[in-house]
Image (cartoon, rainbow, N blue to C red):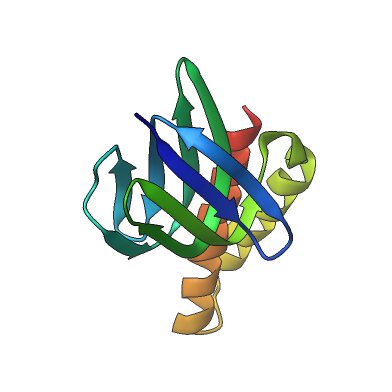
Length: 130
């Protein structure tokens, strides 16, 4: 048995197919979805989505959105996604350094929260490049 999985971003469909299981970055931590999972909806955070099919694992970085499970069918609507080949390491490292510098003197609490979220996303993108 398997799970039907769809991952879609505003820019394009990213994945559609059968997987044995998947590990997704939920807003409060990683979520593992296997066959016969109970119906479930959750908010996604920033992290690496891992889609397992046999000995192969497809990985993509996702940021925000929602995940729904219903009858061995998973749909993920992600706000932003990056495939491993899409990461420009130098650009991400530069943006990360700028963000860390900005974190030293944030304008207010809201700006600080935005910077922390941006730093987390950039770190996820760097993990995808490895």
